[in-house]
Every structure is written in structure tokens, then in C-alpha cells.
Amino acid sequence: MGHLDKKWVKKKGCDCFKCCEVEITVECKEEKKHHDCSEKKSDCDKCKGPKDKVELQNDEQDFKHERVKERSQEILEVTFDKLCFGDKVWLSGVVGFDNDNNFAVDVKLTITKRVGNGIKKTILTQKFEIDKEGHDDLTQVPFAKVDTILSEQRNVTYTVRVELEDHNSYDCLFLEGLSTLTALRVG
Image (tube, rainbow, N blue to C red):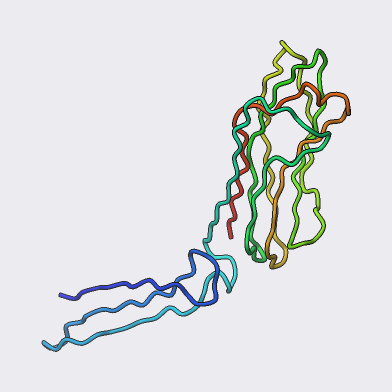
């Protein structure tokens, strides 16, 4: 009867968690002689292209009736060290608000993307209205976006920002409850 033994080793020079070099050693029985049979997989899946790889980044903030301080405010952010050609990044989450104004407030939620130290590029804009106090003014706003990667990119940061359409409305608008940004990279 043979014996199968697997040993997983992190591949040098690769930064993904799934790129492993596997060395399989099998003890074989052949005409009552024992010897080792070895087989190696030496290619790094991350560097060869998309092959069943997943990476998760998450940011969450539990706001306790925190006043929106500015007309435009960054509230959530995640960063990936490296994205490869063909990867897809699924961004989703919720942002909670409480409007204590006696009028409805128009809010714009944006997701921006910055590669390295480059310029931030808006990849999602979502506008919505929060009712006045006492009329469904405590709300959680969901968002989702898929970003398709067309070239290798390093130090990629996704940021969620809330912007108020009326500069007078942020005096009584609050971030409320758990707000999240989840980014799932799939290749």
C-alpha cells in the first residue's frame, strides 16, 4: 500500500496567498522495493494569469450619530497591493444616515479609485434623497459596483465618499450605525 504526502511551500517573489509550490512525494511499492517518487508544480498561478484566486478587503465604521463635518467627506477605504489583468473587483456595502433637518437632503455617494500615487478616478456615483426628520430619515443606503482590471496595477485604493448637494444641509445630517465597504477580488 502506498503513502501520499503533500508539502505546501510559499513561492518566492509572489505576493498572493494562493500561489504555492506543491511538492508531492509518494512512496511506491514495486516488486517489494520501496523508493520515493516526486512530482513538482513550479508555475505560479498569480503570475500566469487568472486562475481561481480570491482576495478580500474590508473596512467598517460604527458611527454613533456623528455629524457630517464637511460638504464632501471620505468615510471608508480599502487597498489592494496588486491587481492583475482580467481580475474583477466587486465592491459593495452600506452607509447609514440620520437626517435631523426639517427638510429632505440630497446626498451623492461616490466610489473613487486611485492607482499608486495617481489621480483619483470616480468609478461610481449614486444620488439619493434622505427624508426630513420624522419621515424615514434614519436609513441605510446600499451600493455595489464591479471594477474590471485591464492591466496590472499596484497599490490600488478604493474610497467611499459622501457629498451633499446643498451646502447648508450638513448641519443636521449624521452618519449613523454600521457603514461597510467590502471589496472582493476574483481572478
